[in-house]
Length: 625
Image (tube, rainbow, N blue to C red):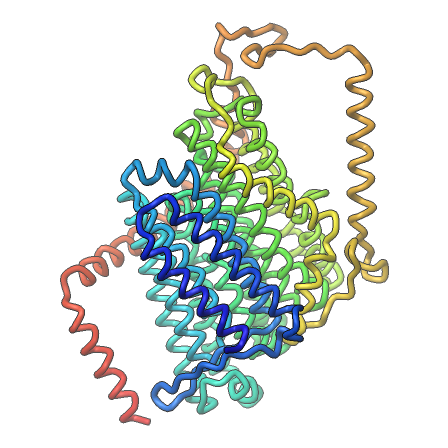
């Protein structure tokens, strides 16, 4: 067995093992150990005797309808697999202690939860190992159904949103399948190399259709506009650790597939040659603007949320726009920024979902208008959220700053001022909304109903602290991640970014995070000494407050986190009511109708009918060849 075979076999074994252990508390701990073992195997692929990760292939092959299916790992696959297994390991750990006990006591099945998580990991590894377009499609479908399973584990509301996702996923799968048929017609094969060689000879019309179908099909998973309406509510209603995993990596499978097809096989240069109406507007420009509009719209929609989980889920949609935009720039800086942002976002998005889940675990709510002042009751969760929001906002010293700096610098060099302005506007909205998140949750006056709240248990705190450390360390020393990014760039034919431990050499504009973070830490240290050495500070009880020239004691309740940013909402609210909201309601109504129809089909029509349709379709396709 090759190392890839061993990894896939162990991942499949994890699914079987957690199913056999059943609905017991030990299920989570066993799953966590198995994910750790998968991580060790993955690291061994990259450096312990197996040489270049780009050369690792599976010994398993299948022949379906005259086409060979095979699997292999390259630098891009390895990079995404590292994030996938790491996110699963920490999510499983988070769910294995007190959270799992309460989840089971409330009627939830730990067996189903951990099986769904393990199935997601296995299906993602199968997708990442795709060696041809047909195996890519099979992996894509496995990921879609595994995602549905973990989304549907929540309440009836979660099931409803999961069914909406299925509708989107089904439409996306049909778009991808149609694109595959066109590729096979043009190249006579589903092999990557055959498709790549056929691209130069394709007409613009045919290639346009292939690009649109692939972009739409894979864009559903990324929740790109206009396919964005399913993700936020579905992820928000997923059980906490599952939401942390999905938010970290699940939707990035769409980015992986887009990179493989649009960058590795078609090439960004060819996308730039595909003109749309005007000679100065190409397929690359169209996709870039879809990415920018996604990040702006999703970010300012997050600003309007009063539920912490939905706020984070909307940011997950917006941050995908940065990733796609960076990849489409396709130079060494931009593509490195886009790919590095996949890793960075996974770390701080996971820790933020975990921190919010910890707050829900202790207070019973994620409503930002019903929280406040928890910093003294849950200080470690506060630190985790603080580090996470700094990373999400793209500010130093956290890792989110590095990937966004690379993207901004690439846009400036590329001569794209409007795209640069759009990405900056998105960052502004991010800063505003994440401040709202931490302020309304942890700052301000403590509510009387939360006076007895305690810190989250250690089984939940440790994963948050590990992720927080990663967010900080990879911001201090970004070269640690840029090494993996460089391998991913080389695997798909992108220019490789020259880098060092601190960041980017001076001839690229210069970014040395070791100096930047060291100066920031020194400044904070001096400020702390001045504050405490002055002897003029006065400690007051947290239930006391001060506003408008008056001291407010615990008897006078004053919680100013309610209805945060009312002035800004007054300005941008009409946009949503008059245009965005009208359009959203139309799309949601249509999708809900389709979801109900599909749900009826799945529950009423006998499975043999679907098998019959599939067989007849396959026979018809073979007969016409």
